Length: 423
Image (tube, rainbow, N blue to C red; front, side, top):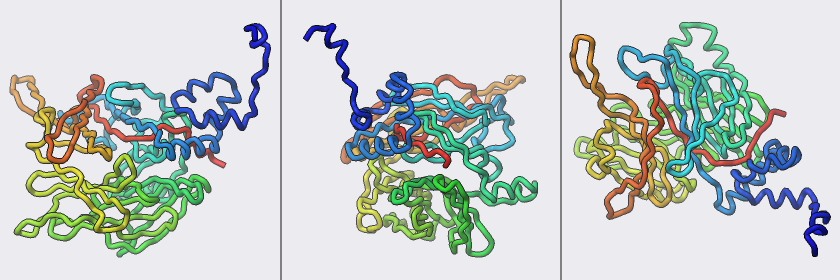
C-alpha cells in the first residue's frame, strides 16, 4: 500500500477501545496525551470512572508509581533567633511551596491551585492529598488535591472548626485533634476523620464523606489519653493511632477507626523489650510499608529504633522485626544530625529518612560565638537495611537552598488520575 493511500485510510476506533488502551498507560504518558484532543483531555483528567479504572488496573499489575511530595513552609523571619515549628500560628508564614520528587533526583515544581497561605499536608490516599492550614490545635481551609492532575476540591469547615473561631478562650484551651484520611472501597467513598476529646470517657468523631459532601458527628467511648501522633496511619480500611500513656511503664496500645463501620477497634502491638526497671519503649509510631503492611517504629531506652511489621493483619503472632537501627549502625551522613525521622520503608528494607537537625555557628553583634541546634537539615537520605549486613547509604537528596527560617515536610503519594468531584 502506498504512503498516500495509507494517509487517506481511516483508522478510527470505538471510544471504548481507546479507553481500554489508555487505561493501560502510565500517568506520565497520559498527562502528555491530554493535548491530543479535548475529548481525550476530558477522559484523562475529568472522568472519575476512568481514574478509578486506571488505579484498579495499575494496582493489580503492580505498576503504581510512588513519588515524594516535598512541602516547603517558608516564613519571612525567624523568631528569637530560632527556626519555628511548622504548626506555630503566630508566624508570618508565606504561601507553601510544593515539589514532586521521583527517584533520587528528578524534581518538578508543582503549582498549587489555591491562594490559601501556609497549606500543610495532612495525609494522602490513592494519589489524593489532604491539606489544611494549621490554626491553633486544628486545621482550617481544608482541601483535597491530586498533584498529578491538578484536581482540587475544597472541604467545608467542620462544626468544631466553626465553634473554635467564635471565642479566643476556646482556641486557647482546645485539646489537640487527631485526624486521618482514607478510602471505603465498598462504597467508592473517601472519608476524612477528626477526633476531638470530649468530656468524660468519650471522644467526638467528626467524619466527612466526599461522596455525600456532609459532616457527621459520632460520640464514641474511649479511654485514650496519650496519643503520640495527630496524623493517623491508613491500613486495611482503618486509621491507626498508638495510645502511649506517659510514664513509660504502662503497655502502649493501638487503636483503629474503621472507615466503613465508623467504629473503633483494638489492634495488637508486638511484644516489646522490657529492662529491669520495667521501662520498655520510649516511643511508638505507626508506619505503613510501600506494599500495604501495617508497621510500627519503636524506640527503646538504649537508642535503638526497631521497625515491626504485621504480616497478617490483626494476628498478634504475625508481627516480625524487619529492621533495627542504633546510632552506631547509621552511615556517616547522620553524624551531624541531632535526630532523624523515617518517612517510608519498602518491603526490601530500604528506608527513606528525613534528617531533622544539625549545629550551626552564630556570631552576635558583640562578637560572641555560640552554637545552636537547628530542627532541619533540608536533606533526605535513603539507606539499605538488610539482615546481618551493615546499613549503607544508597542515595541522598538535598533540597534547594532556602532561607534559614524555612521548614519542610515530606509525604509519599501514588501517581494517579483519581478525582472525587462534588456532586
